[in-house]
Length: 240
Image (cartoon, rainbow, N blue to C red; front, side):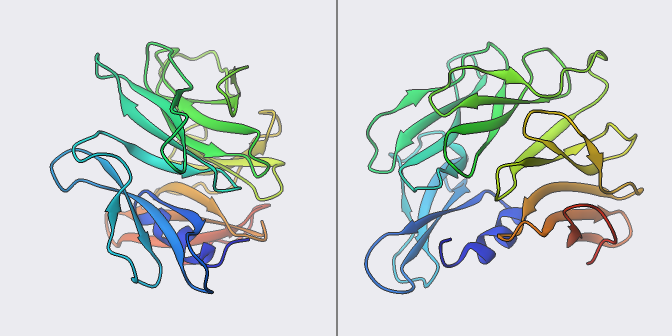
């Protein structure tokens, strides 16, 4: 596990931040990928946890790139960009900028990619059935795309922010399936859905602790604003 992963977990809840891994020798030279909008469009930047390197663009200035997600071995970066029709699609590129490949081409928005721990699959959100977002999974090369949440009600239930558990067995996500914006988890094949939070608050953006024991998420309330919270991955009492 890379150093600095705990920082990435917490920062990722506040914005699009991902670990890249060591970028040069030394105990603290670890990089972050994050989304920023310096010129009014989303771009991907790289910086170091120790601040030793000035943040730099991963792609040429003005290139629209969103929600970076790094493969476990640090070799690939999955990201989202808009096509000529303004539809979000998922691409991947090698860390050195080579091997650019489009992974989805559904005709509807596909976004929020998240790698499986072994790097063989990517889970993502798709609007291709004209719903309020569903969770799909595909191989890392874009093949064998499959819907994990194929419910019958069109545009009623939303599924967002899928995140793979460290052991690859489960996927956490946000859903309105329980009637509110809550945190859920399911097996990696889409079965055994479990509702973890059920309150009047807005719970979103789940992210697993490195040991898989906790799911961190953002809880928003009209009264208190936003907080970082966590809940045992199997369910239980929420801690703020």
